[in-house]
Image 1 (tube, protein in one colour):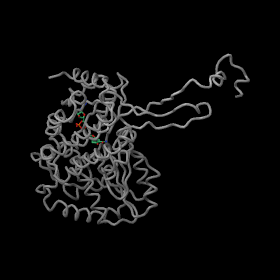
Image 2 (cartoon, protein in one colour):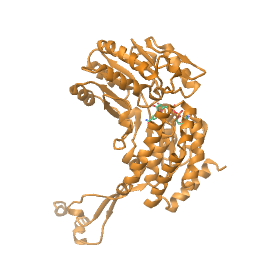
Image 3 (cartoon, rainbow, N blue to C red):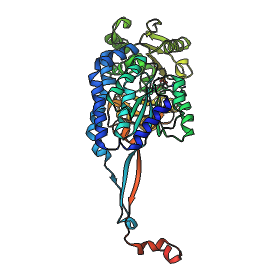
Image 4 (tube, rainbow, N blue to C red):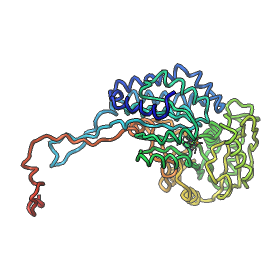
Length: 455
Ligand code: NAD
């Protein structure tokens, strides 16, 4: 088996050969990537079920369909994305041909996370291929079944000279990032992001960071509680709450909370039945370590569990849980929950809710539920977040026309659709100048004079 170094060297010499530059090569690889997913859908679904007990419906929606849609979008738009973008000129450059060319960066590294183990590898890979790069792909070892399936399938479908899967855990990834890459695209936690950044700094490698954080959901003013509960429950408990942009906590007034709770109870029962552990639509926590982390957070919380709270270690199951009377300094507010536990924090006024959000790091997504557009607009205007969605959760991520990414501590850079192509491209400023008008140039040549300045 090749060492990591040999893999990177192989890809680098393929990149230098220029094989990835023609559009036809990129289109073929994108088409093969689509074939890989379509031909092996059953195996992919099985791997996702093994890793997270992902319900087939959720796996198709959030892993397979989203990847296929992005592939269709990239294949349909690549010709126009690759076209040079003509730039305006001024009097002194009137005769020049000025444009911005999108050029590939070189050999890039894509490090995926375990919660959407297919999507989080394939979507950046689409951008890397479309932009003409070679790529090393590092799946998360935590979602082991999808990791080994990708290691088996990707070399069967994509050019082995240009794309390679390197598997491994923290130690292997630490060694991998010692190599020189032209870009690192990292999805995962803020803690690991810091060590990726330190390693990248040795080679001055630019980095995209797709991180997480605590995404708030503010509920204020007039709201239809039944609909609000359905949208909140779906977006929070999808994939057992293990979504980077899942609503992490709710901010609302006491009166809203009292109206919301019965609607939440009813919705949870409608969606998952009286015993959610037996419901096939409830995913499992990815690993014993994360199960213990979540149960520990719940155990240390001083809030009151009003729905759920049960867990089964052997089954890596945690019931969809709602906790009220949660204080700002509660254990549940210390870190991103990343599991099926929803704290509700009461602050009476909308302004207090906005101030609460603004005291924290900027989140990956921010949600506001209200029928009053003045409330939605006030939250939009007075806060900052990677993405924003009113009256629903996580759905804004599914649109390839919207950039997906964080801001500040929730991430650097963005992707999806054209933004993936841009992330993996260098925008090269090109001025094609001829030899005309040399007499005009003499105005900027020495000897300088006051008279030349006045031109
Ligand atoms: P993880 O454990 O799968 O780690 C992510 C990647 O980092 C893996 O490939 C892993 O092998 C690698 N890694 C782990 N330790 C490392 C180390 N010490 N050095 C180098 N590499 C290392 O995933 P995680 O970190 O538990 O991910 C969860 C976090 O990711 C959450 O905060 C979540 O919000 C965030 N996330 C963000 C997005 C997004 O698109 N913004 C998507 C999914 C998850």
